[in-house]
Image (tube, one colour):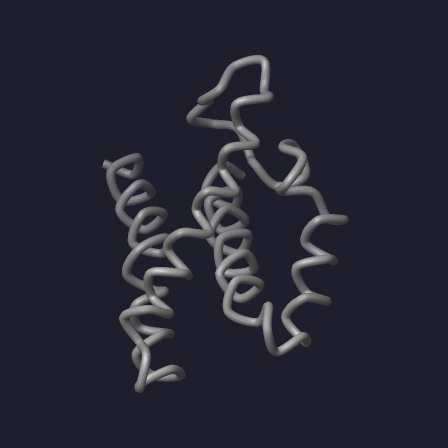
Length: 106
């Protein structure tokens, strides 16, 4: 039961939460912003470099190259640049989602 709840929360945060953020903070272009925020899930392509591509009980944070603390630091810097803000927001939301997923494993 907890695995189902964990998956629901994880994918809800990846797809529904960006829609809510886009709607409330980017009302004029919320659909386009939601699309960009969801497309940042492409950052998970770095999972292809792992020895085992998918491991249900592995914390992605600081394991995969684009999920490291250094990468997250760059995403935070890019958030303050207006032209990269939406993509950076999507990446930071993605990292927060993966981090909360790690908390389920403790």
